[in-house]
Length: 56
Length: 456
Image (cartoon, rainbow over all chains, first blue to last red; front, side, top):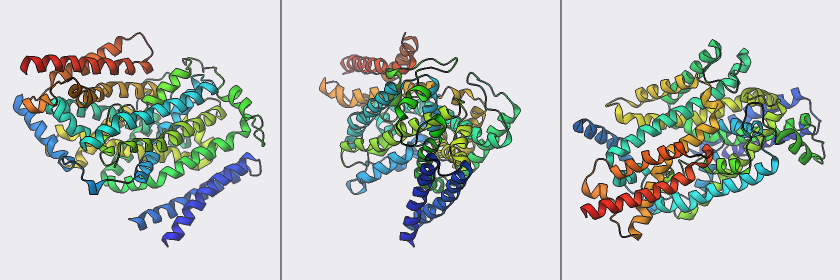
């Protein structure tokens, strides 16, 4: 579980940045970009908080 | 009067009792821990404002890059060569070391000054968060020259956010500190994502071929906004250097570095300075340029990153106001006998909330950061002189401790005198602390020499 939380934390941050790259390249609308950013942020907090709890 | 002061000093000693002992070898921390602490602490709500203000002050791109690179380097070197060596030699917090040097009475005064500074800083964080929440309710952000709140809505908003932050700080500081560590990487990612996403709106091509041209003509174009003074290289360099003056030159971070294995661990501060005080400031500059230079952190973050941007401003404000409120409460606890921690935090939160209603503290944040560092800087100079210079000149060290002084009047005179001289210096506020530092050093050595030879 700890490993999973770790991987999801890093991946969700990568998706946040990836969404911005897509927006920069004009391959995503503002609405799509902010929606993906919002969802990946929520996923990040769930995973990162779990990871932090598991680390104690 | 004397018994009151003795009571206060005794309460303060009890409060800091837990860190009275020197740190033992088995409790020292690894370098990666220091890198993590610095990386987490220096991506705060204020970063949204500071980088944006550089744009409004008409900084040119070259001045910005060179100023931030060298200013942050000087900050890292200050931690490495000034703060960390003393901390790793004495293994005490500034509080306990200053007590030996300045006497318990002056240490109380220092603590209260620190508490007031912390409350103002936390108030600025709340104001910045208010710009994010206010966006959803259509509450206008006060103009750049505002001192007082410009609407009842702003007051209500600042009050509610301040009350919320204070309540959460009362409910659990430790848990929130752990949550803050979780937030930092995400807030930093939102800075980068926001800046990247708004680049096309400034005219940057997909191949980044005209990035430099856009940066020099549409972002850091050397043109200040109306009513703003123009900043050059030296302003930026000095700002980056003194942004954490109280921590490195002022030696507050002795509390952190007393756990370092070696003084060279000061170099780990670069993990906070370059991402937080260079990259994040550059990102917020890009975002404010895309928001037509509107000094509204909430609006610029929303335009750049949607609701995640709003969340980043709010969380950055919350996670940095929280430890600031805690520290202010800790410092105030000395004058509130037998009060439980929640009550002291409530008082610190109430003061902070009132201050947050006044937009001047976040709209004049750059000046406030300069004043904050300046006010506490002479104490750093006094401790540095006592630690390194007095023994070299054969002057007795720790006279306050050895002779049982409640107040080291030499230190008090140097502290107040330096601030008075700095106030009248005919140079820009940002530059005053440096001559002030040397004035403090020299004046303290001279006064201690006189006292030593008189009483010796």
